[in-house]
Length: 340
Image: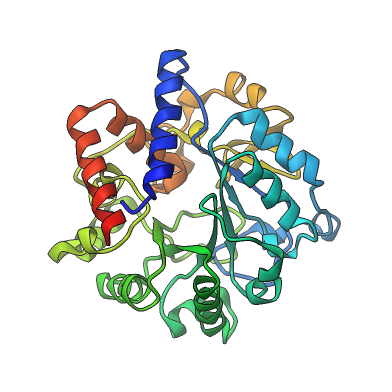
């Protein structure tokens, strides 16, 4: 796991505080969506299916920052839509960083070089660039040629300017262990991004493409083969060791979607950003008035093939904190990753 040591310590301290306060449900990271509009029409995403009136809306800065502060989460993932289309996205980031929240700005990178001057390098801030494969594969997934090349140039420029850059890669049933290995080798070795996040594609109900999502057994077989030969240790993956074990079928976990809540223009979304069973105005209401026990594989048929990080990474993190052996394992990988 390549999470910076300072961030690892802050998250560990936060988790210890929750345990001392005997809180059984709390957020690790908030997924903030200050808009739904995007400049791409990716086949695996359904956000731009909203009506035109909704796509024109932009969340006010105070509302966005207030939601994160209300939750108390130490980390924020800003997505959408394409957040760089928000005219005040730099101010949202600035205010969150000023409060020492770790902020990941998720972007397809088409506007990244144009907007980069609006941001300041900080250990609390990172661009999180979406990369689903090498040139042909990535451009096909986002339904537009040239996006991969622009993303690569944007990453290089951001690194040159001193920004932290992470990537987020979603893999489908059209992927093979080799295509995963190729793109992660490229990101890790050639572009030398700071961290990489990976996730099996989940059948997001509004996505135009419903044919290429992975099932549980497909996911396990795919990642088991991709991780073989020591690749896991080589790649700077921004995941707990137990989550990577989960992806390749070494362990299984229940879903803890409450730990990565989603806040958008509609409010706090039940139960996660991939499923929509309504919205509530406050984080407290989300936690206290959602029947969390009815979600997850084996409970809700919609969850049958889900192994997404938003539901299972937090479970792995909590399992790590509850085990001295796993905590030491994660610490060794964190220290190792920070030495590279």
